[in-house]
Amino acid sequence: MLRRTVLVATSILAAGVLALSACSAGSEPAPTTTGEPDPDASVAIRLVLEPGNLDIRETAGAALDQILVDNVYQGLVARTPEQDIVPALASDWTVSTDGLTYTFTLREGVTFHDGQELTPQDVVWSLQTRKDTPAWSDSSRLANVASIAAEGQEITLTLTQPDSSLLWNLTGRAGLVLKEGDGVDYKTKTNGTGPFALASWRQGDSITFARNDAYWGEPSAVAEVVFDYIPDNQAALNAALAGEVDVVTGFDANLKDQVEETGDFALVLGQSTDKGTLAFNQTSGPLADKRVRQAIRQAIDHDAIVEALASGQTQYGPIPELDPGYEDLSDIAPYDPDAARALLEEAGADDLELTLTIPNFYATTIPQILVSDLNEVGITLEVESVDFPTWLNDVYINQDYDLSFVLHTEARDFENWANPDYYFTYDNPEVQELYAESLAATDEAEAADLLAQAARIVAEDSAADWLYNGASVVAVGTNITGMPSINVNERLNLAEIAKSNG
Image (cartoon, rainbow, N blue to C red; front, side):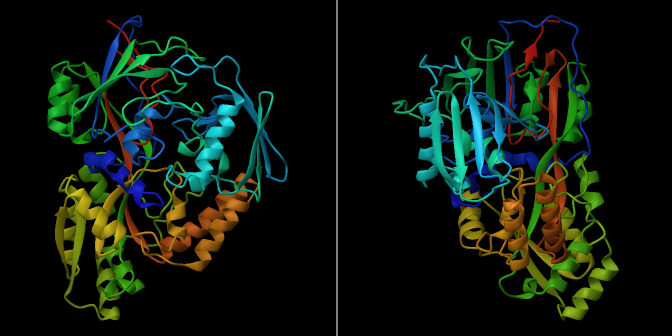
């Protein structure tokens, strides 16, 4: 969820109470309906955190990516919930054998929501401006692009060196295409090419999208989508049972029986790249000792965490199962309180007292388990629950903390472990070199293997503890089809959503 820069740290808020959802090894099918889709239907979807503004160029936060990418703004390519890269504004593309030239064929007949035609020059301008404007989110992701040119409907990107992450980066903010010279106030308005256009924003309450009838692809099967921002899970459950919302994301799997009791909803579990990460400040003090960090890892009962969260799977390394380079690393730090005590004794860390700094929008489930487990091996853990600006300043910016917990939702974010300046405070030149080699690889399998090698080193160093791999936990109305169930905390592509009257 947290990326390279301080700006993107605000994306943590999009996860909000999502510490209540863990991960599942697969996904459960969404409910089915036998009724005919109603083209005039309005679908109400509960989300957790409302964005502060709508400027996806400069304003960080997963709250914007979740609703605006794919639905309103698009790039040459897109990603499926399963993390596959697929055509979007480009109908197809080719990559040269040396990995230095990417050629995209731009679709014809695409228009922006204000009726203006999408031109190849819009694409060139968008990508070049993104690359040249550090204030725009993810501008650094185009650092290896030497030139961007258009000839007819073909857009060519020439690189200075191979970059195995380029296509993936183009599925995100780095690749979004805007209208050159557009005068829209991006903080409160939008102008994209997607299947939905912004209809209204009732700040503090909801955001409404209307179907884009001029969409270049298949028009939406619903007339509008309303995002209702309801931070509290119980309030969201009440809204669902009262028929006020059709879908509840960021749900608590422990409420399954309650939400399904009437037969109007089904709880759907899907995979995600959410990583419940316990960060260790390794700059000084007892946590600079690998033995202490390893002891903490082996003191924590990860299976008990997953059980308490009522869904999910454990994760013992920095790469979740959906991402390239994933490997089961449970052999590195298995649950073993006796081994943890021995490591602490060997390190001379008697009567250790540590502080866990955690944003106050997370539930108490995780801190309670950590306090109990660490107490069993002789570590006293004090929990400091702080508001997000305080966490951002103290932990993320100033790196003034012992332990910290947040849910990192962003896919393919291993780069943070190769960045010694990131708030994880982890610095290993071998990992940095392996990551650089993975970026330079022109073969996907080779790139993934290099990432796996680097991830194992990170885990063996006990650079952090990964408490669980969070799931997408969604309560879906039984009259709703086409609702995504994978990685919905990061992206919510609603192009296929439909609602029936029966």
